[in-house]
Length: 173
Image (cartoon, one colour):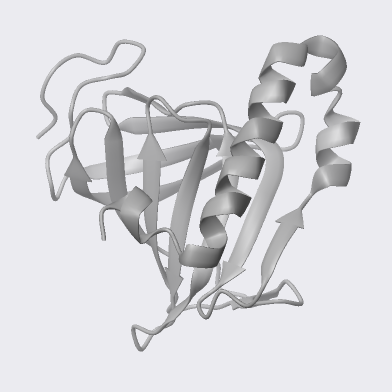
């Protein structure tokens, strides 16, 4: 059961709580999917969610498939999320990181405004790929909100700097 209120940062969620992750993708359609809370310290929220599509999504550098499990790390004070991607057998495929505004929690909904920049790091850390910079440029964020755009680029640089060593210290491993 959730504790606390649902203000800007929201209250803490309890392990086992069912939540909805709401990725705000404007102007593209938003993405909503169910997840289960693993931990929440009031700043760092960890949830687990299955790959929510029946079809395989081949990104060229990784395939997301039915049976994959995502352990997702959100922060209420950071401009990114880190998602550990595991195959159906429990082997780590890698980390998919989204540059976002800090997450907010309202009731049982985790709202994460996506800023279009992403980073992929393979499990062996041999591949670190910056993704979707074209979408970021096309979003117009740099013109509409230069401060947010600068924070987004800073977040991507921070993630890229962490990637060669893995994200263990950041995500509590």
